[in-house]
Length: 464
Ligand SMILES: [Fe+2]
Image 1 (cartoon, helix red, strand yellow):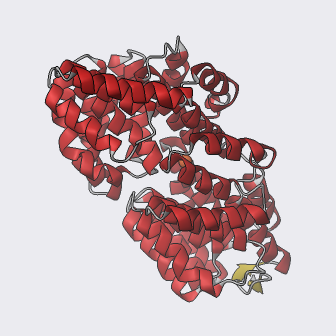
Image 2 (image 1 turned 45 degrees about the vertical axis):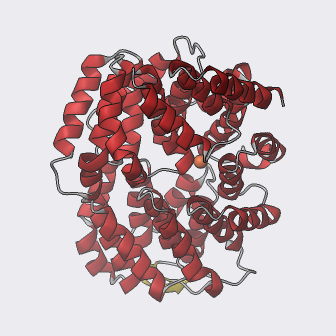
């Protein structure tokens, strides 16, 4: 083995220059959510089985699946890595990637992310480190980290680099999660103008349209680019999920259910964590909008029952738990909650978040679903300002805020409910759900005239 460089100057320990170039192709596939990402890596590993980055890449892909069974595969890859790196004379960057994988396998996400960010100081062209750091920053729930991670390297990349658009899209998403919507939209649209198949950039703009409540624009944006982003891997179902959110606020429930069945839930047996997150989140929302979702929880609960002991991402575990609780699988739900309680005593990044925030949300879900609304509010309300720590996007986490508000409305404390819905109107002034529920809590509080005005506003939004 010797050193080979890809076309952008990154050094790889490999058997041939072709392996280095193919690894660049793999990174491009990963950034673009291409369905053949795993296949490309497999081809590299077959042609060059001792190439360190091919092995490490396999571990990374396994960790990115976000479940216990896949994590076990990553553990295996990582276990033999030290000796292998010595044997083939791996370079410093590759050794650091191996250390990042080991830290990830050990559950130390903070250290994992730090290693990638350190790699980027020396190797700002390392697109894989950049995209992976984007992922773990996302699950740290702090959009500023995502934004700044990109801002640090963007000026160092040439606009002619074939993957420059992906960086614009990542930057756009970081900006969006940091609340800089105008700038986010500009970067996102510029990225999509380069490449209409760039699903992450389409997604960044979709988030801007969600957060700025431009629901019709959101439907049009996602629809007009569907021929591009729908060619991606299961990430495409998340864009359908976004489309459903716009339709929900417009009261177009039949369309939401149609998209749910045809797209969002169409591949849940492939056991990709994001699919279940999309599905649980959407079904629970639909029910809060008063829609009967039939027996749709059953299939989700079936998948969730295979993840009771997962300890990768608390955000994901909470969505499995939602499916179990909503489906009435309380034995499995209790097993999962026991596992979460044990997890919360361990010493890893997500365990601490589980202890500080996750357990309260888990308890709240169970209490809310069990009709113990006031108790649900009591456990969820104190952690609401820390909710971002569970990671995911603002739009994704909003379901937990909606559950809190829904429980507050159903409890007998009309004053707390009024306060929470009024607060939400500060942010969601075009939300029919928020106005309708605000009207109901005003009514419960004896404010009949104000209630009528709020309900009228909800009707006006739906008729617009
Ligand atoms: Fe999203």
